[in-house]
Image 1 (cartoon, one colour):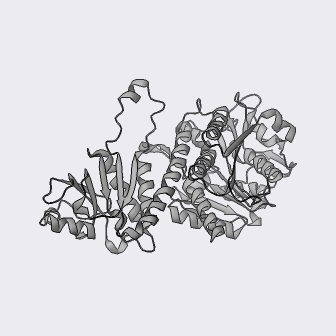
Image 2 (tube, one colour; image 1 turned 45 degrees about the horizontal axis):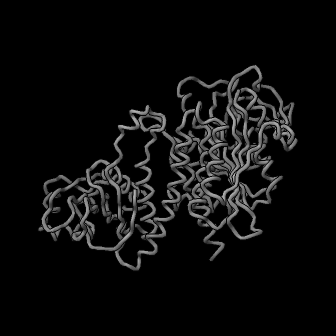
Image 3 (cartoon, rainbow, N blue to C red; image 1 turned 90 degrees about the vertical axis):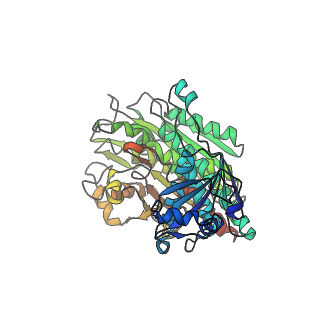
Length: 504
């Protein structure tokens, strides 16, 4: 797919399709009004007949209109003009992408990027429309048979141009487009890793993917710690999880040191549990197939590293992915076992299905001992409790640094990959008390996502740290089952904001 930004009048575009917006109560956008006037009222006639009422997310394609050069005019419902906000714009952009994917035209010029969204620039609108389009066009076919892959027809649309009102708006639009394409590459990479099945996407496979990134992007360096080295380092919590699997654990480290010399790095840490059966505390069989998505936190680290390299961001960035499987076996953790983490803190394993925090705590300790980080952000599909609390719209956000929490939250709002801050009060630490070890790995039936974050906080008190619980946002179930690539967008926007603030 090719994308462009330009400025031009809709009736003069020689393309397969021109996309214009229609608001509720049959009100035309400026571009739609121009087309309507040029065609002698063709759009108004269609609306009076009731074929398009402007309802948000609806589309209608008109063919062979007089006095315009485009083969088709697509009308996109934008809802009430006074309510046309960021959410409505994204929904309209997604509807446009789905409709363009379905029609026969090879190229299109989209004028939705000219619509007014309060407080948002033309660059933001181009960026959001591009991300929406790339999300719609993502299609995981890697595991289908050769015949199915060979016969799969790609979308006919090949080129999309986003229009801006004035030539002076072109630099902002092009900047938004460039950022979107870099982010989209990272999101797609994370989605692919998430969608791969557990028999392919193993810890060893993930380590190979890190090596592949280093080959593709020479500025990105990787190394992998094997189990023997982790044993020497005392990573008893992480290795206690991998004991139940025939797949050896890996600690994958990716470095992209492209910022000012001496600048402290930003470190992303992602849970890379490539399949989670729950261990001895085995999960119910319903939807257990979706536990291949338990590595989506790690996949997001891969995606963010890929995006940073694609955009050649001037920042020092480290990605760390502790990776393992969690399966029942004679050597697996048992409820009541006590393990010793790299930090020396002993942990009573009351539930073997709370394994993500066990692999993360050792990875976070290792980061603290090996990097003088500016900030550390971990992300994990950590708790079902977070899904109950926040559902799919927002990831759970916990932090011991108010400025870091605000920066992450603002980045999520900007990019449309939102997070909601939750408490990390010391009172919750009392729920993790154990009569036999320094800490228990679960806190009881209440405040599950908070006690999980509180557990991790025990290993990050000396760091400026944040935790993102993405259990409700990293993938979708049901008919649209698949990885979402979240929170790659939030992470990369955070990096962009951080660079902009540093350089301002």
